[in-house]
Image 1 (spheres, rainbow, N blue to C red):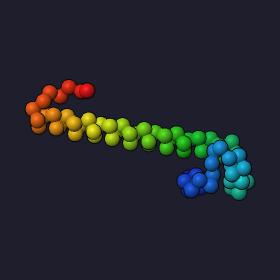
Image 2 (cartoon, one colour; image 1 turned 180 degrees about the vertical axis):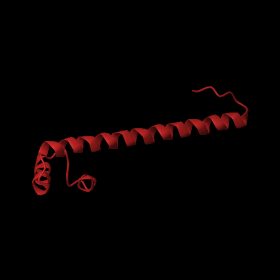
Image 3 (cartoon, rainbow, N blue to C red; image 1 turned 90 degrees about the vertical axis):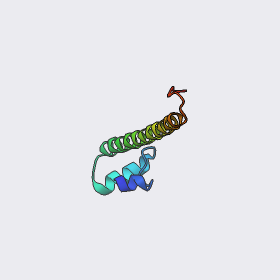
Image 4 (tube, one colour; image 1 turned 60 degrees about the vertical axis):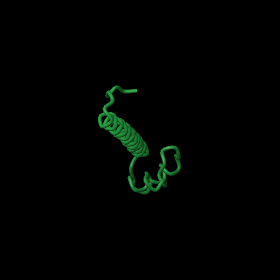
Length: 76
């Protein structure tokens, strides 16, 4: 299911693709929908984590430059 979702052939917003997948693997559509929602939450959390890490990295580099230049480490 993860592979299908990654290739965008199984999409939560497309009830037909959910029904096809559920029929092919003989599972309830509700279970497929629940797992797709779970995958979307994981993707969202991963993106947020990456953005937070990038922001922290930028701030750390800026603070390092301020220390090297002898300036105070006050956030802007």
